[in-house]
Length: 486
Image (cartoon, rainbow, N blue to C red; front, side):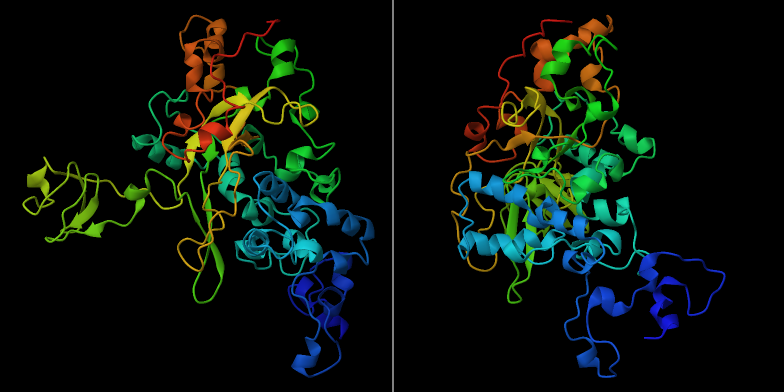
């Protein structure tokens, strides 16, 4: 290949002496990264053995140490998912029904090329293009980015929770939750306060400030762990070491027992199911989420009112282009219009599909006594698991029972929300009598506004009946005892 064409992708044009680009990758031929056969006019022959996404096996020629490290990266192995599913009794042995569905469903949205033993890091999806699971496409031509772009790479995959929390984008969802009496109750300790972007984002910090290259490439990963088991990973005290005595809450007792997020997080996203499905007849994998959401009825597309149907209470219909909700069971004598306000009420637009629950719950940390340095009390997030994951109960072949032990792990798990603020509702003084009265947010009956007191009831109607048993070890049934030193 001629040199001018070799560099075309990197130079805004074949000949442009004003454009300076000195990156070493600009001197590589297309086949160096993508394979294939150079020097042939035959299209089929030229593309033989070609790979669209450069992976670890390609990049190892120049980056051998990093490429070898990525073999254990959680972006490549997805070992955290496998550990958690195995603890719930899922059979992930080769060829099992659960393994086949896991490889098809879970791996498809991760960064690795291939699955199982053949998986390798998809370097190009972090350093050159948007990940395929987020739509794909080159970010800046074929230019290799030394650090992944926060928007196009990191949050392209970690968007539904991390991005929305970090950028402060959950306010509208929080308002919708609170507007629905079946979800968030008025006793929420944050009382609908505006959700702000993470303080670190407001200071201009991107993901790699706390998640450096070594961690992303697999440094500190040991066998059979999740992301919180990575040794040497950064924590709050990496930057904020001198905390003891800096204020009344930073006593030695508090810092020894409590994860920082318990006082410094805002409400965050919780999910309650992750139903994997398979479209027919193509067999393409996709997801339907939150099937156990109690607002599901409210979020569906309303039916057009029919004179031949008797509607149940809380049914949603449209009539003369207006949407109504039934207040009681209706019969054929009650049309849904303004004159029938005893039976119907004009409804707001249904909550969009895909919503989740924005809430804040602290409790006993399930990592306590298991992971090195884990504090006894921490923020808990409800994770998307229920009996229907992998069942394909809507399309394809129904195969229930692939998660036989739903109570094997808590469904309220240790969380590190990306929505940090220095001052939050849990540190606030609700009585106006001085900072000491904020202690009641944890050490009086007021604690129920912030703490997980019941694994099922605190989900505001979401989740399953198994939640109570699954979370028996993380529920804080009474206010936590005050720390010894204040």
